[in-house]
Amino acid sequence: MTAPVKGPAGYFPSIEKKYGRPIAEWKALIRTSPLTRHMELVSWLKSEHGLGHGHANALVAHTLAEHAGH
Image (cartoon, rainbow, N blue to C red; front, side, top):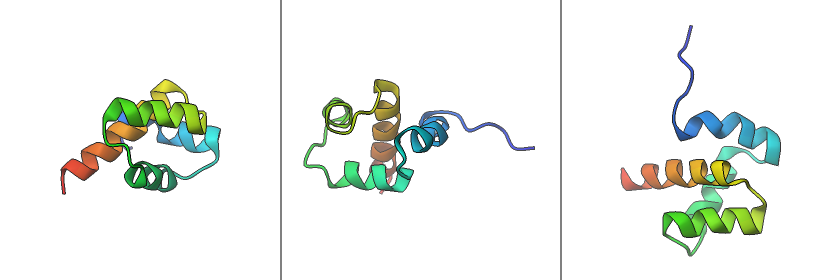
């Protein structure tokens, strides 16, 4: 039995279900945005794409953490 996913990725199944886009598509939007700061990206996802704060925050945190590792 696998352990439940923790952290930002724990939101991914509900994000895909609620907004109808795969996580890879959301991450691509974040990576190609001219915005770079965490809260700017969260606000942009909320205002332009209608995401809730928790979902937007999880996507941005996970995407920026991946980028920081490269």
